[in-house]
Length: 366
Length: 251
Image (cartoon, rainbow over the protein chains, first blue to last red):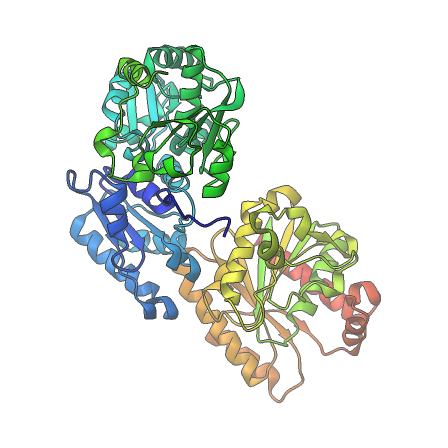
């Protein structure tokens, strides 16, 4: 029972991460799963669901489809929908059921692309990994399939701006990006041309682990370097501007310990630790469920292990739903995330960028 | 890198043939990786040297993602790299899904980049009975499929099924049919039956393996004929087949 979740909840799953990354891009997205499971995404993980239309569907997989491997039904339905909706691209990926069936989304996507002539791709999601795993794959695939190379490079791409991690900061992040000649923002508030033009940027700015794989892919394909961090507070903003100028670097604290434990998305938590260090604090521990290690962090999704990592903390900064497993003697500072508590604390998710971040830090006596 | 998958009715001699082809290619200086895709984990018996290593799925069951490549890849006769996918507890789980998990494990751990084999041979259980057993012919795995058959009716029937599956998956960019390997059983009208099969599946015979007691004797010693009887007619038979497969792959 060590891995059981008794007092807390699970983070958004990989397929929700992929959905979040692709939501505003005009593609037809099919999650191969039993009908009804999309409500988890729509009601918990996607605050844009009732604000911005998107072509996201669940395939309504049945027991006999699963047993008999009825891929043709899925293919026919996707082709029919694509002919009607004329999406920019088609993305297919799976849930735990499709994973157990071993559905080959890459092969099916190839078949659909041949029939429809619309770019189609499959992702390897299983519903058993973190949202970062799914969003990373989606962004990396966009680079592989749609970003055009360029001979001239100027400005920046912001990589990893999804509501799952940056709901409160997204608008401000775009403003920060615009001040640095932003070419694209992946992918809240993003128009399609931003994605295809992203190869024109001089540097990629990875603001969450969701964007790391895409940054690495763009570095390999187009020679675009990247830096990692979030412009949290005026100090973080200034530091990020310097990293952008140097076209490299990663904002993180060099004072490890266990006095201040930060639980959440690793790029954001490392940056927050760096900002706190500038403000005179020390002894930081970052805890994250992200399978992609970013800097020095405790990687775990399990309640007991998170509780153990936070056991000696004086201050814990985490989503409010983690409060029950944090030590009672520690000062708990709530930093809600859509990826963890969904819409429960939506209005309390702070904007951490530039001066707004300073205000949040001061309000929390940090 | 050349990647080939071998299918055919159970008991037709796939593992014996694939092991001998591995040995013949290794003898010529190629780095060969043989991957047994059968829950029984018995594909590589005739090539093994080191103490038996656990199959991929046995280790995944115990250690999950902490399993390392070194724990599942062993070196056999002339350094052939040996891997057994293994399978679930008999009577439980899903063997086909197990093959997918084992193949994905090798992929995730970058087995082909780490060991740089010139040739990878997938020895697959019997027929393409479910999605899992089609895994070795998915994009990124084998490039060509070879079907082993005799002139026996059930073997021909299985060969037809395999060829149909391969044809059906062409739309998904899966492996193409490389040809038919005949493992003679000296049944009536064997040649005619094979010829009809080839016509029906639009393929051709790439190699003929005569029935040989020498192969059986080598099997009894848990060796390939290439190792046990290197100067035998049977050993040369497999060497010719290996050359034919290489030529076919390069075409």
